[in-house]
Length: 481
Image 1 (cartoon, rainbow, N blue to C red):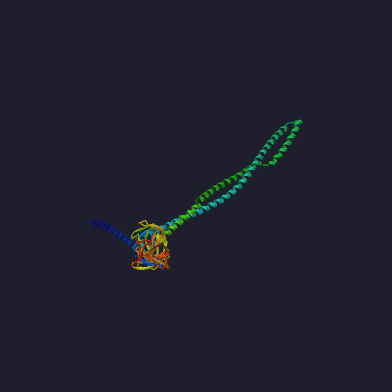
Image 2: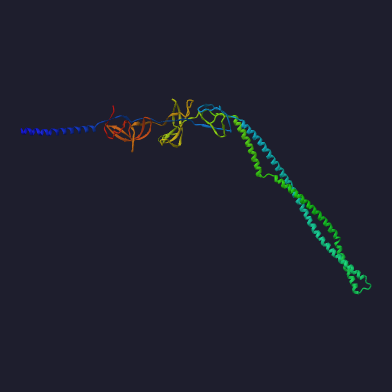
């Protein structure tokens, strides 16, 4: 009995242990089975083919030639055939002006121009007369100066002659006095009855001296009359000189008066400028009147995009009035991020879609200035020219763009969903012998579906197209059926 009981106790201990061991083994086997589970994935073959890279975006329809018309005159608008969005034809009247005030301005300019011409002409004529008068007076002054120079020379000669004559007259007077004294002494001696020898000798001597003095006096002649004659001549010449000096003063006065009315070069230039300004004012008034009468017509077929005026409003010359967009030069402006700028080029073909209608065009301009959007992304503006515009295009509407960025033929390509990126670069998972292998690749252009593989893959290799966080390099996998 005791042995049987001991056996029963041993079995009671061994059985639970065995159960635990069996459970552990089962869980271990299950764990091993789960680590060896096969991941089902979708795949595609790397194959040769053609790829057309496209950029799909949208932009705003506009015109390449939007012309703003400014007022050519200061006037009131009579009529304004304008409405935003209205199509206009080349030559169609758009604006007419009231011309009454411009006609008055033109008439005033005419009168002012005539008055200016008359005043300036009078000034020029007076200047010419003054110049002629001054020239004539100057010529007479020169002639008078010549006469005065000659007369002054004669007066100088007469003055010298008269000085000599006066000296001679003095000498003659002295001789006359001496002769008179000799005569007086001679008479005294002659009146004596008996002359001494000495007195007789003195008388003889006096007679000789008298004869000598008389000969000297005879040489002077009638110097008094000559002095008187020279004095008369000198007075006459001095009177002539005074008369010439008076004439000279009169001519100098005429010359000064003439010169005073002569215009300087600066004054003549001022008159010329004044005349030119008056003519320009008159011409401008005439042009303004003609332009106002002509009004404003459309220069090409287009669409009114803005208007600032209406009939009855007054406008200043140069003030903008309205804008017209050329309907034959339509375009689409769109924004481009830095990621697409590297592949965008002028000349690339574009398909434009607006209101379910398709148009063809090409990239004509890529802006060199980027502006930030509200989200903070820097975007450049590019433009597409529409080759075949029609009346269905509406300025300001959005249009869809499909831009051909490039095309390659017979290149290795895979679905774009197969390529992923990490810090080392672009990679794909290749399914080979029921295992996944991570391969880094070099990519090229891409379309909406496929991307070019330049390096890292071979034709025919299967790449995984469903990549998620459960997929790892080296794990078992099988194609999803």
